[in-house]
Image (tube, rainbow over all chains, first blue to last red; front, side):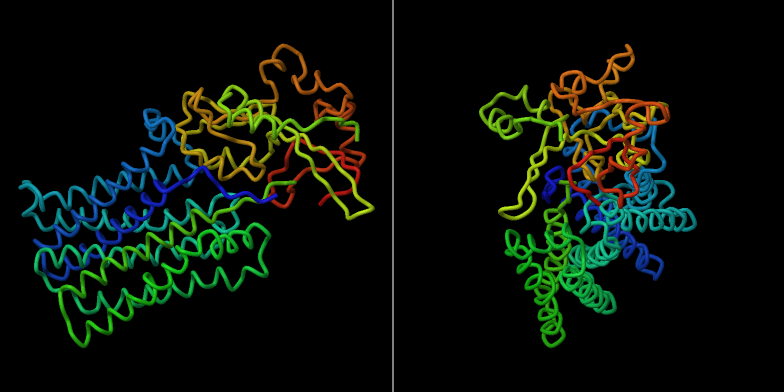
Length: 281
Length: 178
């Protein structure tokens, strides 16, 4: 008997989406901070940390007993992927937050370049670990669709896409140019995410019954989300990208950024909601 | 083949839908599923008692972020209600669908092998109440126990062995299962 999982819902999808987007935006912001543009990139990093924080608050709302969450720190099970995630998230919030806070308030260390670089580097390392953790979390379950080695890879790709999306939105808001190579990179991640996602469908026939069922659900009950992902998340970004190369505009960039964020949300929505477990009878 | 149960699971589901929440846990901690096999005219039915399989390598324990899920010295998998944060990661990790969130106790719940009864030297309630003796409980490490002899005979099988969980609950089916 195969059952669709019901334990995790839209709040988990939002946490994974906002978390992945936030940490990717932080890494991008720190990269361009090192390239020279300081003030704006600290603000972009702050947007990334804010996104991560909102995602975590949504995750806490999902917990059946949020007041017990302290036990993840008091008595962590170091073998648990989720426990690693808690530490990675906290360390990202601490180091990334300290790096980004000067974008909001004046802080004494903000003028010290060595300190800022150290905080940004540590924040980026833990951000990357958070980005990989979002997929690893799902992979360490009994749900065959999630267990696929493609899942962590797919989640990293869509996190990068959406991170570029968030960075672009902040850049537009502050009337800054979005680096051309960054927009190009979003097309690479979009294409790779398209290939990885499509592989789920391609290998379904030679996979387990639970995996096949998950793919069947994507093509039946969740077909609206699947079509939306392919049209709005994978194909339309390319159309907007090429259109923008011919006629560049801020509107195009905003539309592209929103589509990249939507790509991440729809991918995670589909993967989470199509998760099926094969029970032993 | 000793099981004569009438499957009450559907009735329990219906009762829960009608607002009798107290039955919800009853149906989830332990219940009997009906498995119909074969094609007409060669068909059969087998009832399977579903509980936590108290695995040797329990994935629910390894994924629990707080250590709320743990295995005792005796090999029983339990949940510390105080430390459970309700993330339901263990629900996703269990290949047997044995775990569930209980809003009444605000913790993940599951079959405990009636650990409170075992502590008093009694058998689990499901074993003592079964009218046909279809359920057998014992020490697998005691080669002289009835349960050890059945397992050693090869008549009993574990479910989903491919998961590598090494369950400690075994089933004697009328037909061999993988």
